[in-house]
Image (tube, rainbow, N blue to C red; front, side, top):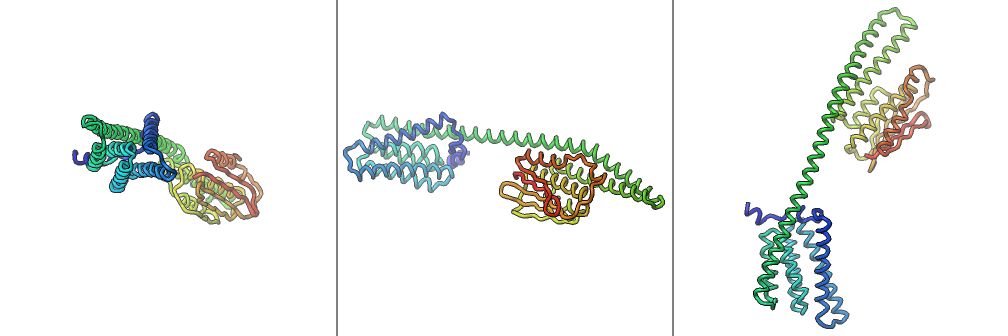
Length: 387
């Protein structure tokens, strides 16, 4: 355990700025501004400088700031050798500043490197880097050995305390993220349990009712077929067969809805192909296929079902073209039929008349659009929803 603590990096959460509160971020910015001010003041208060010296001083301070920023980035990514290289570069710049007579910027760099190395590097690398920085500081300090010892001890303590504080904030950030993930998982589990309960209720009521209805319609069909052939008998048989087909389709759609509630959803492309199997038509899929959101997938399925139901009611026998296109931020569905429309009969007007309105409301709830209008040869239903 001790070896791991000695050689391991501080966590990414500890090194990241996201774990900082606003007061801590304000303090950090204040420290940066103070350090930059000290470096600039120490650089330009040791005598007169010409334009080139001023430019060189500004470039040096800017280079130190860039190097420090690069060090923060490489240490955040846990890249040891680039981090040590940048730290060594800062220490070398401090030595050069000391030789050039800029003692204050050199001291600021050495002290900053000492604290930062303990805070952001593994201890096996941070302690030697801190020792080098503090040794250089002690070599140029002229305030006496007691002041030097107190200063170096204080810097070591400050660096280690900042490290512990960052680790504590990182741990709190990880715990918060885990708690949020647990809450999301708990909510999803509760939603799945509720959908399973609704699916059981639908199965026990609607699916059983449709199954019983199919049995009775099949029995009625067999009884009617035993009667002598005639116009009235044939009309009744046709209606019974049509009702049986509708009940079978309703049972299949109910099973699909139950599968969707339980999370056992077939891909949209396969669903559309199954839907068009009984029709003279085809399904075309364009764009790069991807997993759709549950809401978008359900909208595409329901709109396709309603559009094909309208084709069966108002234009039986018409050729149907279903086009599904994956767009960058949404999915588009187009259902187009070709063929002359028959006169409206009793069966065609048996619906509630709210199918298209319901499809449009479903699309608008998702932030999409739905258009339904006559086309060149038939009727066209176009859906676009975010996905």
